[in-house]
Image (cartoon, rainbow, N blue to C red; front, side, top):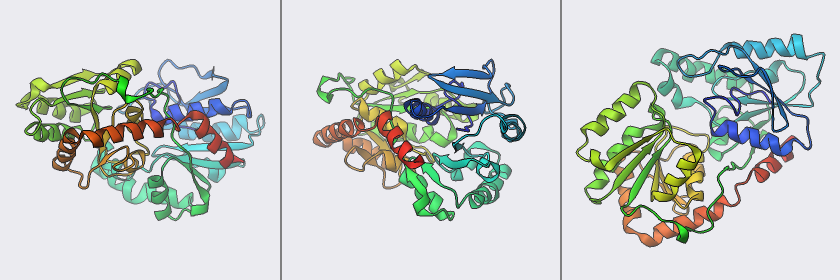
Length: 372
């Protein structure tokens, strides 16, 4: 597998976690090597859970973390001049996160593309507008056109639909289930929620997550639910986080907004279990992993109707999906869930039942079937 970041990268997330655990499940059938990007103080060669990791490129940070542009050229050079004569891979999985390695165009091994989501609108929330325009209208459409005949592994129907729009063949696109590494609770009756109805905002505070919308929806819903509380957990990022903290400071309800900062996995599980509802308002996701994680802990979600989130929520069965992506509509759904106890219990139980099926074993099994 060739990937942008690996499981030990300081900026690794759900995608890297899923990839590693799938490979971990497959190690009894394959000898597995992962080429990935280097990061500060990393080991260039490291074996993790029986998987050989080789890290390439610079170990320096830049403004978006341990991301180095040289890794794309390093992979090309490594394949042709270092590795080619030594190892003949049977299968290569090229994972794409915004920028492709294009290995499937020059590598002579059988290659699959593994892509969780297209960047699309996210270009405008991650880069200055000039580069965003180039990425949205030129760079991404061109590389997708070049790869349109390749076999693809992805994680949601939304991403599959996006790929079809760019000329990929439906028969070449395969979807794997997205597992979670949090053990689902046995039943919702054992939970001890906060006394007052509580909302949870979970994830890095950055523009593409639209945290401001969540705070505004809380303020609107607060007029109907006087004792409503909002908990925010996640690392701040740049100028957008400053806007979020400024809005919290100016809010007339600031005493009922609790910022927890960055939290550990155990803290995340605990706060998921205690809060009544998770709010997710991203611009776009490959799959809303935090949604299914929360559902496994007896907490349904209210989400915006965007790619990835409409896949991780079964509408009106495991969570609620907004008809319009606005703080007003989000607040309307918060009040709906607060007032309708039978609906809340139904979403809780359905979410728990669904999440018991989302295991790494099932993800790896489907992944292996695709490769075979």
